[in-house]
Length: 86
Ligand code: SF4
Image 1 (tube, protein in one colour):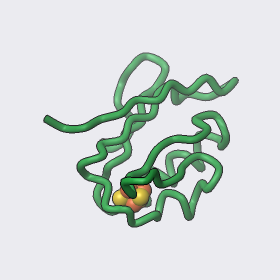
Image 2 (cartoon, helix red, strand yellow):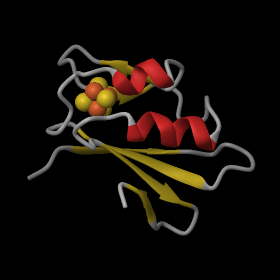
Image 3 (cartoon, helix red, strand yellow):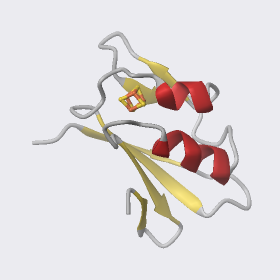
Image 4 (cartoon, helix red, strand yellow):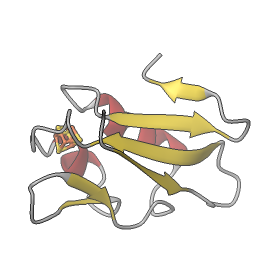
C-alpha cells in the first residue's frame, strides 16, 4: 500500500486546502525544495515532508508540485478535488 502523508493547508485566500505526498514515489530529487524551500524538507529517510503548508502562495506551491519528476506531490482544492496531478 502506498505510504501517503497528508498535510492540511489553511492559508487565507488559498484555493488549495490539502497537500499529500506519496513517500514511495519520492526519489529525493529536491526539485520541489528548489522551488519552495519554505514548504519542504527531506526527513532522515530522505523523503519529503511538509514543514510549513501555508508558507507560499498557490502558484508557487503548484509550480513546486509540478517540478517533481515522479509526481509524488498531490494538491487538493477546498472542495476536496485533486488539482494536481491532473
Ligand atoms: S521533487 Fe519529488 S521526488 Fe524530489 S524530493 Fe520533491 S517530492 Fe521527492
